[in-house]
Amino acid sequence: MHEPAPKPPTSDVTPAHIGIIGAGQLGQMLALAGIALGLRFTFLDPSAQAPAGRLGRHIQAEYDDERALEQLTVECDVITLEFENIPVSAVTSVSHHNAIYPGARALAVAQDRITEKQYFESQGIAVAPYAAVDSLESLGTAVEKIGYPAILKTRRLGYDGKGQAVLRTPADLPAAWAQMHEQPAILEQMIAFTREVSIIAVRSTQGELAFYPVGENRHVGGILHRTDIHPDDPAQAQAESSARRVLIGLDYVGVLAIEFFEVEGGLIANEMAPRVHNSGHWTQNGAATSQFENHLRAILGWPLGSTTGKGHSAMLNLIGQIPPRRPILALPGVHLHDYGKEARAGRKLGHINIVADTLNACRVHTAELERVIAAP
Ligand code: ATP
Ligand code: MG
Image (cartoon, rainbow, N blue to C red; front, side):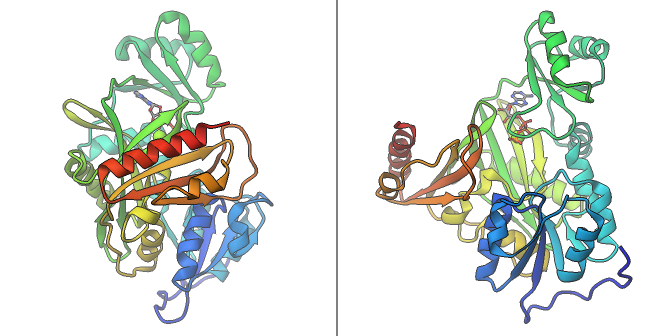
């Protein structure tokens, strides 16, 4: 990279050009929100089939390709990410020439499950008991400290529950360690939670903060299956205060999600995602301003939009296949979001948002939708 001077602040009169590292469904939904605001997009993604490539210029290259990053830097007014596992060094080198949000520090913290837990602890946020593991022997020591049941995860690059093994007895240790393929790992106590919840929070370059209503998440096979939004969720205050500390402490800009386990004594932070998040997709139809629009407003230093919920909402992920559209769209308050990806078992292909005036209507329509989706 050899562009010397940092760029001047983005104008709010001429349309800004946004660079996004990654062109998957999150990039696509960011662009769909941003095109409505008059923004233009360039994406950097190695895949020729990347969904968001249809909505802007697509630079097909690896995420840390120096020349591609330089092109993005020169072409765009501000750069953001839809994917947290890009090398921190790439973000640092871009940051010398252009604004990039979130920044290197937030990424470095979120990329490693140990530094992430340490960061939560430094902010006074409770986490599950944990220990670092880098051999079968140290797994033995860790399990003595943590107890059974426990869950072994790779420190880096996990998603959708991949790279995880549950330990219930000493006999499970060798197979669990083998599953880590010699990568550094973390052993966590298995938390007997009552619910899993997450909060979507946003902070702008101007320091403005906003928080969405907390969502309750249900996973199937380690993949998010469904998010339900209950207005006045009792977890809201604690989730919001944790998110505020994380955002301010990291001088964070953009949308950030934090996943929690709810136990009797309150919330335990599981992990954070320094980007727009699957458990915030309901905001496209169920909130005054979507997480995608607010992320763009935040990185441009524009005023944030209201995060108020419109009624009772739920989101169902479409995994492995997109069901027939007619019976889905015939249901009231239903919004289909199809990412345009090739169908494959276990792959997130789309989601459906359900918005209703009453809790009961939301439940009934969601149950009906679950039946339609499960139908062969
Ligand atoms: P994703 O990227 O989809 O959020 P991930 O691979 O980063 O997933 P986690 O969020 O850590 O992984 O774990 C996936 C799911 O496994 C959690 O949402 C939860 O249901 C379960 N899980 C993970 N860690 C624990 C734990 N310590 N105690 C109980 N359940 C856990
Ligand atoms: Mg998770």
